[in-house]
Length: 323
Ligand code: DGY
Image (cartoon, rainbow, N blue to C red; front, side):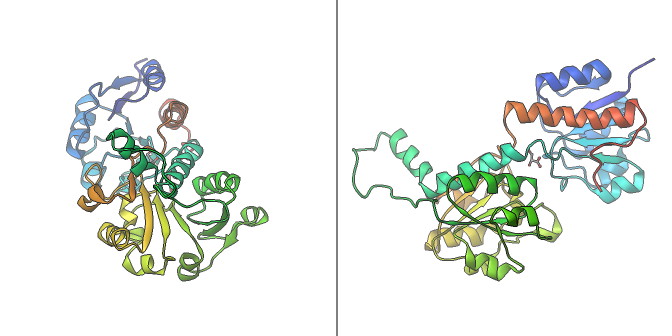
């Protein structure tokens, strides 16, 4: 019996590609050149794909989904975020969408912690100083940051990643505050303080870590008005989606000194980033590394394949179906 055809829109980790090749006829992308929506639809049609393994950078908008061949049953995205896929258009065509929850929570929380530490302790500026051969020796007032112990960390979006970050931050002696759709009694049993409205939340914290999904509902959630509600000297970190931040407003607050620093792993329109960030010394910039560990990327790929196998090999529901 011939194997089902699977389109891989990117080059995935070796172990993931090996398992995909074992069970499917794959249409690979070995050069890892990002594909446009129309290229994805064309490759799927030409290869008669029944499944698509895609990633967060692939825009699967309504017109792309409409152009997919009749046989496509599932789009498995190698990400927890699904804002790059028009879920309504997929549902209208009867195409299952699956994602990769859980397996990237710790890795992403680690990057949030890295950004909090780097922003608070001025790690980016310090590294650039040494690398530029401009360090002239230890000085009592050089590059002083702020200590995290006793500071209030505000977690916006207390899902799995937010909860993993809370656990790490407690190890640094931070006090945990959170804003979320629902209250989480287990988090509160561990000392986290829930805030029922944005103003009280933003006014109570020293560090804001953002973990909300992208999409129209959260676009520019952190705007000039909310930034002004943060305490002077606060730090902002974003490992969720870049679209949730109004970049000119954040940059202005970093330049005016209202905010001490920021750490960003995600950007609106990435890989392009807002020009002002390039020259702001107090912003730490990472290239969307949240889930980028060997262990996590393998686990994400296997989770995608578990979903594809369920639908395409066994005719069962995808275990991590979205929506
Ligand atoms: C996700 O999973 O949504 C990340 O942003 C990609 O690693």
